[in-house]
Length: 107
Image (tube, rainbow, N blue to C red; front, side):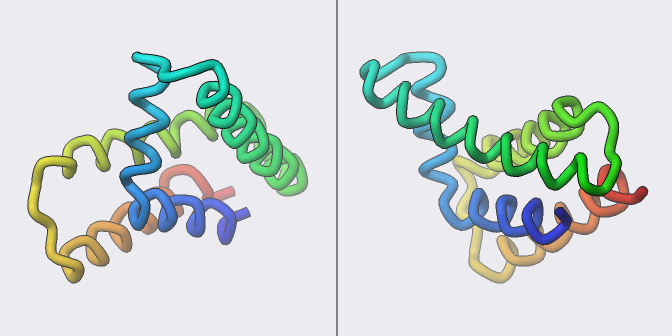
């Protein structure tokens, strides 16, 4: 589960534009097809997360999922307008992964 969360967070940091497109589409839908693709992608991601969370006996799976990924989205939004060199971005990613591990994934 930790690997799945860490890889998901890393992908979000490396592909912040995709996260931004998904968020913008929720507010200003581009098309039904785009909405359908994004919904399918997020449903599959949550489904996989839920399966892993249930294997390690996490309760409140949806709350855990929303807590982790809302935090990541908030950090990405804050960084959107900043010029962020790769080393600073890597350090921020490592910080957020440590925080998620300590706050959410410790059983």
